[in-house]
Length: 171
Image (cartoon, rainbow, N blue to C red; front, side):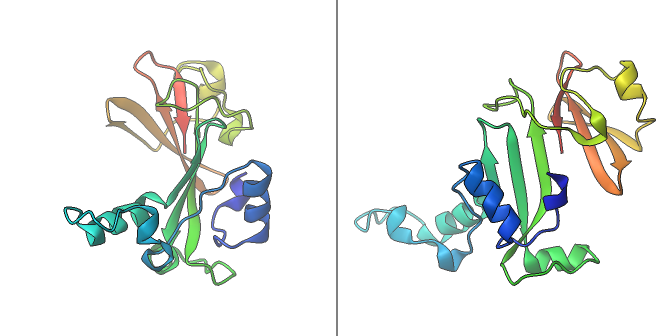
């Protein structure tokens, strides 16, 4: 799954995976959004330009709650400002992050694949499997969740822990 990081949004392997997993959403530019799909033409209260911008922004998160995963895209232009690698293709978006969730994190079901670092959902920060990956580069509190940051296989990986101290989120 991590091999899909830094891929163009039109990448054939990414499209094949989305199709196989029945993930139908895709990131969209403002030009690709049809206002008629979202607004009644008689609704003069809507700030349509603002709403369309919000729809485009939210489309950058392509998720499957039933599979416990979320692909986070960045516009190609913004991606190239912060990354050295230039992805192949000419799609408007690049996969910048992939997040994996355990059941109970928002509306997600447990991701059933292999997690980075061989980690498993439900482990605690003091468990031997977690201690085996070493000491985190940073630890911070994000939305009342302890999150540890590591570099694994040349990737930044964040492990998020529930209030009870169990691993519930990886991205």
